[in-house]
Image (cartoon, helix red, strand yellow):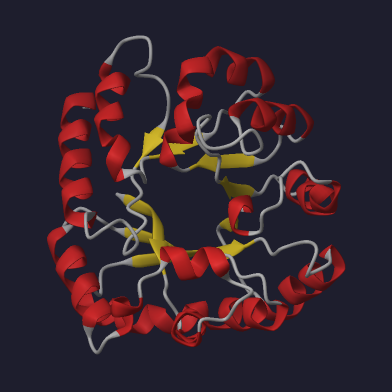
Length: 263
């Protein structure tokens, strides 16, 4: 079993939070400073990973960072945290997702050069446009998505709920999917309800996105995927650990129960 969304809160993120670096307003609201008190993260990781016996693989990732220097610093150091996780559970395998940078700060040529020179292997990429306050349809993203589409890349893309946005919507995602149908999308938070329009998705792609269950407040939606109309939609486990309000174990247990129903 895979946890598709395990966050690495690196020294770079700790520095941003403790120094309250102004360019990272969304991070300062989303990452509490108490996570960086002595041994707190290690103990959280240990408690979760020792409980989650069926996990075999963690898809690790950092967080979106606007500051160009700090963005590259984070991505260079993600692998360094695997050793500590291996000490907790030596059976675990690891795959890495790379943050897609703010294209207003990092041009695609810089990003591509960075990949070629520094990143030996990766599982895919992640874009959380709300942290950059920039629509994923913005033309500055076009060279990024062109690259991902031509390489059949995996891209984790955050949508948002209709009551909070008219930008990061299911409608805009369908327009993106229409143009970039070769990208293998992962959609956190159950795709923010996109499963209600799954026929539209299937009209556009042969292999539909996977929905990540990384939304503890919406976990009751798993009941919907037990229904015949929805039980073919691919839903996979993702905890968003440790940024889920200390609910990783609860989410894992509920997903195991869901799997027992599906199987």
